[in-house]
Length: 328
Image 1 (spheres, rainbow, N blue to C red):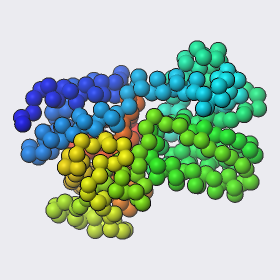
Image 2 (image 1 turned 90 degrees about the horizontal axis):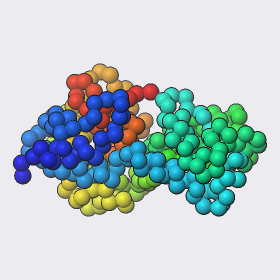
Image 3 (image 1 turned 180 degrees about the vertical axis):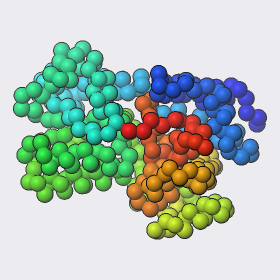
Image 4 (image 1 turned 60 degrees about the horizontal axis):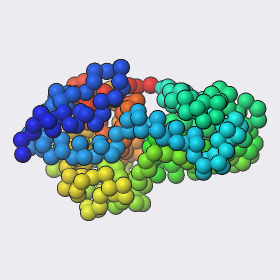
């Protein structure tokens, strides 16, 4: 099937609000330029699967606004009394780099005032009954861990409940962050409970690799640069057994999933060889401290593309990115 202008426009139409006001609005020409960097034989199926998956993994501003508005009145969170709950809940402003936490607090302001009459700054003025930590997403868990660990060691009370609210949650990162935070709390003699809220939850744990919702290749491509890169890794990559579309069923088929995994791995290795601007953690399939092929997330929000997504999503010159990334 030949690629039509409509197919290009349809993909661009999935993320029209990506970094709105900061970059040029994506259109069919933008998609075509990005797609042209792949071999001609894979361009049409790659375009088709990207349209399929991003309809599920791209998080637009309207969805975030709806999520936050619903959370303000959520009975499980507020115990059925939003006004009392939010009066006694304190928003944590702990982010060392970036502005996502403060921007999400601003987005919470309007529904919070409409439901309770309080603004974010009015909440938790006295002794807080609980704390609210907002962020775009939980990927490897390192960002949330770093911010909350310092708080636990310092300003956190001796006993507290913390609600961690993110747009996307990866289970491996959550397990790591939760385990380390509970360990830190115990070490400093504090009793801290964590509860987690999200729009979408993804399976990325190594133990459950067969059911993973992130890009985990089933094989190493017959490509010498990729084979050479694999040799530099501390451990041999854990490959995904073929045959599963994951718990969230983001992918349209096993064949289409494998196409994305193979192509983004190949191009990620290529991008690394073409640019000297990456550190060792910028893996072909996305940032990861562990010595692997990469994190492999396909989550992108209207605010930014995480560096845990494949390099082919966001890397810059000489590569042309689908999602130009704003760094902290």
